[in-house]
Length: 568
Image 1 (tube, one colour):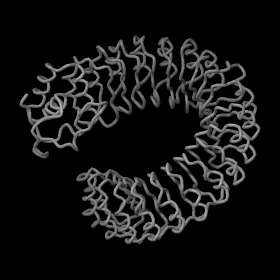
Image 2 (image 1 turned 90 degrees about the horizontal axis):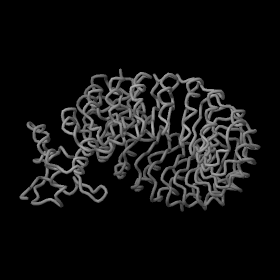
Image 3 (image 1 turned 180 degrees about the vertical axis):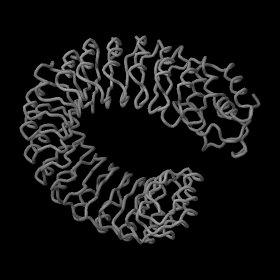
Image 4 (image 1 turned 90 degrees about the vertical axis):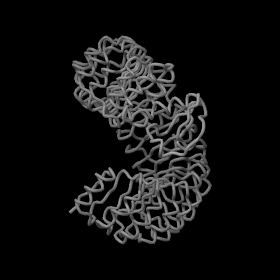
């Protein structure tokens, strides 16, 4: 071939066994010279993706004309993933045979973009958070007669007229209209004609009413159905569920559903996931749920359920994930649940009226990976019950009675990735027991009594990516210790008024830092020089700081940093 190009090994990666460039538009003069490519695909991808300069559009069109279809798809995905695709470039792909296109909010997609999509072989189209799409764009999507999966989540400018424009998409199996807030029951008349639908999400479509929902009763192939946060829906409209006997996933959270709804519904013997959070159900529903033998995931958070409900649900011994947060379940109910449902992998007990008695009985939950005990009376004594839950990955102990002594029970949790210890009963001493956790990525010490010494104890926890310490006791010395946390991406040290520009300057040793909260510290305009040395910084919190609006504007324009907080 005789092709050579500027590239380095660190700028390429393998995806499904193939080599692609991480940054396809990187200029050749910025890379190291090498004599050959790893394969022909590598060479073509780089040559094409670099053809976006002065004559790039012409070169791109020329290359695509002679390119195999699978390679065209790889080039297209690379442009999308790196957010370097433009409308002009997109027009060159209008005849490509792409089976899947996914655009997210990072690319400024408008109706005009949809005109140039290659609909011929398109099966899946995702347009998540594309606010620039209106009903006009839906007319172009109507060309996708082979589409089986259409995701319009958060396309907030689409109305019922836009949905009506795609009434000819008879092959659709999956349709996501989440947060299309202008959608009304009139739009559901169109959806009702898509008889092959198996997955439908109408979350946060707050204008929907019972009458509209009932038009969907002929969609008998439905497997996953969600109307979460559709506040106007009541049992009357939700009776449409009686037509969905083969449901595997159902979300009716934050609707007007009551216990009476389930009296007229089928057994749902195939139902795997059920979310009824924030509805008007009560303990009586427990008896009806005994028939849901396939249920694995249950969310009844913020519902008026008590121990008697749990005593019924415990018969579903294959349950894996249960959310009882903000319910009236007590120690007795939790003990009953964990004694029978020993396959649990996730248990949320946030703000339940429980304490050590419940936690001590979790000793047999060998598969537990997620446990939330926030705002409960759990103390260090209770943690003996989870000492043998070696597979825990997330443990939330915010606002509990856990003390330093209790953290010794966490020493051997080698898989623990996320730990929340936002409680005043934790101080520097306790951190000695968790500093050696090899997988810890996220540590929340927001309100714990941590000083510079505590930061020194955890300074060698190289796996940390997110850290919050807002005790008010940190000084610039703590920033020196933090310099060892090379993988840190998010740092919240707000409310520590002893931290100044000098301390922040130390953080320039953290090149991966993306989010930094310096609210209510002693920084001023001079800190901007240090912040410029954080190449990946995207979000900066400065509320309550002496940072002028001029400095804020400079940071936003020169570094493209999102500055949050009120400046003088």
